[in-house]
Length: 475
Ligand SMILES: [Zn+2]
Image 1: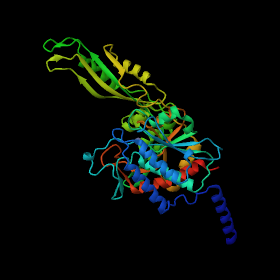
Image 2: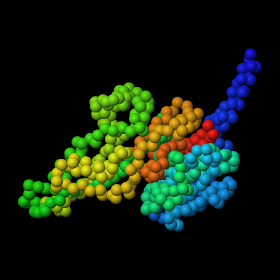
Image 3: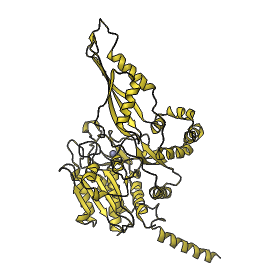
Image 4: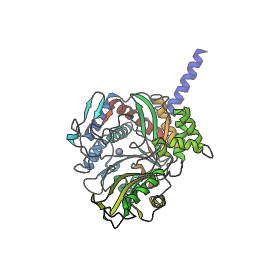
């Protein structure tokens, strides 16, 4: 009996290994040589300055191209290209059987500025200390570049034959600059990076709190970012002779009406799924409220209660908030002008022009003008939520469950913007998958002494290796 069961077990085991290569070893770590290579690539990237002011992404792209060519990629399958010598992008490809359309992995090479005097160490020196890697870009997002390059090298060396092409694009100008790499590639070399869908490590949240892993947040939607100038003008005059009308009072009245205004409650596929899963995670009265806003019709009292929590509020509606004011020119003069900057985060499906008209109505004063103070479309592109496709979400769920059992996968809509807005606007569904866990109280991206836990980095190396295989293995 026991022998028979053993035989059955062995045959089941063989079946599993044949059908799901890598399935049983999913929790195994990369070997020492792979970890060292990942670290070396990461170090090299941190130490190449890719800021917009004095750095350039071409050096970083060329360095990554050299790693890939050294691992056996042909010159045809690794290219560095860009609009000018400082803004190079890397594009690499692993050929598959073409059973399915390609998957594109994007990650930016540029970093925000970092000044030596603001930091306690050189921001462009890679330092490992007390369980962290330090340096500009360790969190945003050169760890993602290093993990993806490492993954592509491993798969190439293994002679891996995916059922679809795997494309890697490491790009310029996500943080600033005028030549956004993803947009430039899509406008000029669409066929080089055209894909069924896109994975972007530079969005989403893998959250932990003092080492305890909380959630695996997959970003599938983004709000649109737009500034408006709200302005009142007046002939002004001497302050000893106040007129009945006054630019400061008019602007203040308009801003108070904005303060009291709530944009309509609205969910999309991604935020509905977010609240459905979050309801079970947080539980209690808040969890019950989340379930109540998902019913038809949604419970207005539950919407009102959740609206007091800025994070939840921002996932349920467009928000517009005054961020700066400026008015008057002298202490003894009536103000000739009063203006405010209002920053809006617009839900997918709504346009900046539409929100401008709504602001005019909210101001409800013909003396107040509302105009876009940034070029519409400059900050981010209007982009639809990406559908939560099983062929994307199931592999993520599968790898996450094997590596971090019990940590829930939750789809997210970001209130900020990433290059995913661009790829979505060009018709490619895009999913933000960081792969590395960051402590919720230690997010230093764009800040001083930016750092990433060493353990998170190597887990990311393992996670992405299995994820890429699961997204591209014959089913
Ligand atoms: Zn970033």
